[in-house]
Length: 58
Image (cartoon, rainbow, N blue to C red):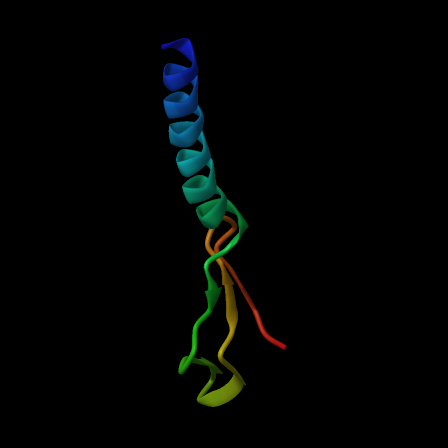
C-alpha cells in the first residue's frame, strides 16, 4: 500500500515539475510572428522566454 501511495505522489510531483519547467525555461518559437521596431522588421519567428519575459532573435 505504501508503494502505491509513493508511486502516486511521485507521478504527481513529476507532472507538476514538468509543467512548471515549461513556464520557467521558455515556451519556444513564435512561428509566423515578426519583431518590428520603427516599422522595420528586426527578425522573424523569435524564441520567447516566458519566465523572464524576453524575446531572442537569431
